[in-house]
Picture (cartoon, rainbow, N blue to C red):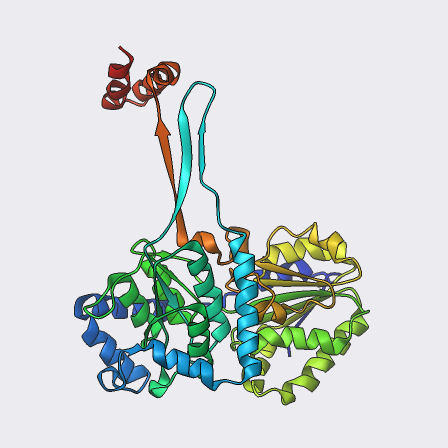
Length: 429
């Protein structure tokens, strides 16, 4: 059974704090295992990749081929139904349109004392995309990662994906064809992340690695940050739904289970101000679970990590919601705008009864790669900016140096850095 909390209960504060602090991510054993994998890939390169692929994905890279060709991707696109192709193309078009609005503008100006200053944005040279292919294969994740990189202007995009028994979901290859990703490697896991970061004889290194994966993939990205840039350290998926009794309980149950079915460690939380509605949603979850092909995973997640929180009103709920800083937040109430104004921390917000989180996973446009584990307090979802970097620039003439240089000399001398002071002072004479 999921956790049931009532804000009127004497022990609510402590119980809710325990819910906020609950840890569902990698343990020390994962960290040690990943460190060993990274070390081996760095020293042994392709040989380590081939061995790990044989052990974990049960196929020989040298026999099945290390790389997926563009022709295979085009063939996969041609093989899927018209309905699925249209759906992928609609998703790609909407994701592209949304992310094109994120492209930053260069700046270049001369200020009041004659100093020219500004910044210019440039894409990274190469980006690595991790696309899951173990528990499930997600063509939507490929689009969500590849399209922002394309919009940013990245010239080389290298995709890695696990291929159990050497097979790749044709929908993933179809999505790659639509997104224009032509460098695809049949390797996955922490070893694939290591290959992208360090490079091997076969796979050249990249500058940034993005994309979701399991605990080993997330831990590999965490350990390799600094060698490469990363989008974020992603943990188990999560959703918070704020819903009143005017909702159909079956709709809200489906929304909660849309995250529970991702992984046994996913988390789904309902806030409501109506006890009868809370009971109705719990019953609706129990009724829907047996209908899901993902029942085993969803049931475990809901039982171990799910929660229903009964509050006096939604004014009381919103500070609690902000403490959770959830990956996904649904506001299924009469006036979602009023609650929206009170949200301080969330990866992505879904406003109104007709806006389920699941539509955002596919075709709405905003990115579905979002911060988890309360990281929405300080980070954002994947964007074009993850594939770009900003370089500032300055230009001073004699007059501008005369205007601001003496202050620089004074500060350098105060900090005990005489060479700094001299480099400016010599130009003031």
